[in-house]
Length: 629
Image (cartoon, rainbow, N blue to C red; front, side, top):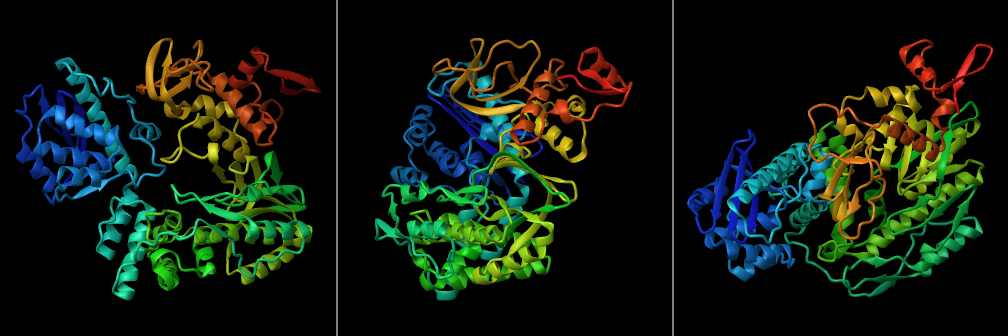
């Protein structure tokens, strides 16, 4: 059995709500000293029942310590004070337990906050998942509640619990992988992030190999120099200078965060190779293109080459001894990599995907000063070497007369002359031999880029790969009028008129924008909340504004808040706004705007006649028609 739990805490009111997957709710409340429904034995029975899986959002940090406290001290004022110590005072759960002399009950518990990507609030996840009701806490947390207020808080708490259930369902694959890994390694990994799982599994393997656990090792240096591997070499004077700058720049470790600060000498490097420009960074190499389109044709072909297992391979290439793992890191990590490849070859995708989490999650822990893997030198050597390694390949291709039009962390896009394709394959193969890396190839029909992080790539088979603002809505990304990107992609791949995609869409969620407004938002004097959702409506006047300073929230002129999703499509959607937005997208990615390129509808169709009546078409001569400018 699975139950979703959430709490609400006020000076004179406490609510612990448990909801089954079928929506059945049990409430345990204390209001103005009346604890008649606060059955401590029943609560404890629910929490400690091995057959009941309790699911929370941020439960390890808040809900579990607070309900543990409430079971011992069922006084709403004291519970509120304890809650404030965690929420307002930032006290960690382990500090709270230690301070109160408490221990959490032994629970069958999953906390979703570390599993969900991006580490944002529950309301934002709800907005990304299309939650019907988006509402902030209706009454300030310091208020003294009336009986009428309690009804509102119950409704609010149940909605948050429903969103928690939606989030759980959307993470079902990730959670199932964690269940399998927990059984494999005999450690409860269900509530851990990818990086936390990586560390736990590596520690387990280290222990199996050595009979001990790795210790946390504090960095004994405050700065260091980057030490490039011997295979990093360049032929041009410019890139030899880049190598010298990276090799001599002082890498300073921030004493508070434990992270390495990017040296200005590296950040200020301006690297120009062929017609492209590049920048180095702590995170990865990035080309600097903007508003540009590239297309394959009879003379050239666009080829994307991504490095397989980029960070795992780079980390093994460094042959270093991070944190408390020392000389055992490479054997442990290499063993996991080989085990994953074997599982993938055997089509054991459960094991393959589980070990992929470990391999990719490891890198993040090398910059965490609280981790047994902490090693800022290792982290920098991995990232800087990765960038220089890609620059080696770019230099060789450009030197052979093959343009590289984009580069982003672990891959490049090549505009390859068709008569040089075999030579390019040979250059890449030689580079792979020298670096120990391997690339995967994807051929594009076209690449439309606003910039290196926001683009639409049309693959050889006609499907599209969209990144950044053009990517589909997911748990990682807020909706930003997704119907517009969808319409542009269909237009670029299948020549579907933008107006057809926009006006035929029956799903209101495709027209929405979601964002966080710090300090809260308001429209026409009515407060909306910190998480705001809207669409663009015909005849809608004014904009949404910040409560704190009255400034306009960007891109909200004509926006109509939609915090409660309707059952039917609103009849006032401003389709013209969305079509203009499509035009803006097309221009921003180097494609021509709609009036000059969109195919006309079928002659004498209803859409044709409507466009003609509205003056959108003009006769261009000899019986031909085109778009009116």
